[in-house]
Amino acid sequence: MSDRKKLLEWAIRWILGLVFIIAGVPKIIDPAGFAVAVDNYRLLPYFIVVVMALVLPWLEVFIGLALISGRLWRGGALLTIGLYGVFIIAIGSAMMRGLDIDCGCFSTGEHDANFRRIIEDVILMAGALWIYRRGLQKNNENRPVPAD
Image 1 (cartoon, rainbow, N blue to C red):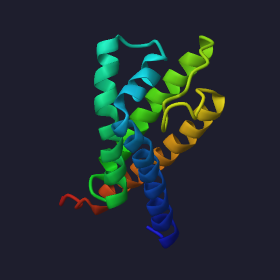
Image 2: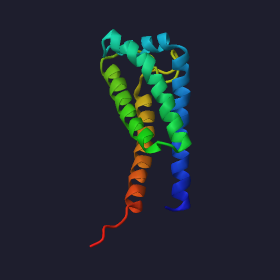
Image 3: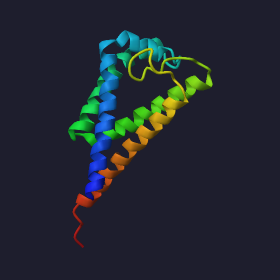
Image 4: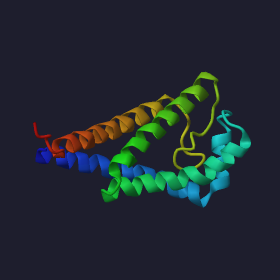
């Protein structure tokens, strides 16, 4: 892999990792506020909202640390792709239903669930997809060739 691609991979991992850590920590500190933000989407029963408010922020921080540390980063990238897919669907659903709500992305009350958030999530998801694919390519390059 070229030095440019290595640097780009490192930069994307760090950007995604920091985004997840910065997003997760305030939610860990205020799970009740995050539960309100999730409940405002009106997609899930309240008991699932509560579980999500308690588990998702820790998952975000874990993913961020995995991406930054270089340990389990492929799994972190895969989870990132899945989470951004869920976020995009949830925000799109809120927009289509005309809900004027906070997205719950970082901390409550600061970020509206709007098309700009979807674009941001698509860009970050594309970065995660790129580093995940790079990881798969590295795996294939390092596999031994079977003997005939």
